[in-house]
Image (cartoon, rainbow, N blue to C red):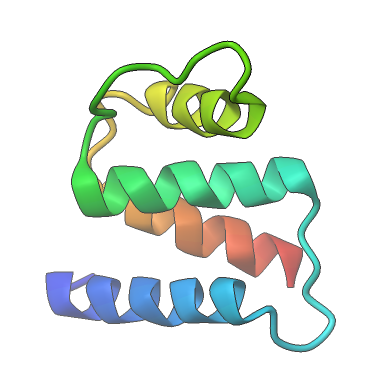
Length: 88
């Protein structure tokens, strides 16, 4: 797949997930997986300090993203697209 095609397909998948179109209603774990894959695809490996113990949502997001450390941008995009295709 060409890089520009992958990026375009990824952008379309992100727009679909973020807009909550149709009957698509991911659960919290799926939202966390999409979030982590999006961050890995757009920013690379996790950055910054892990949020404090009382920031449950922030810690969950950080932890999910941290698990993807080392995954390439292309792989993160492909995984995001594939995960959405499996849920539709």
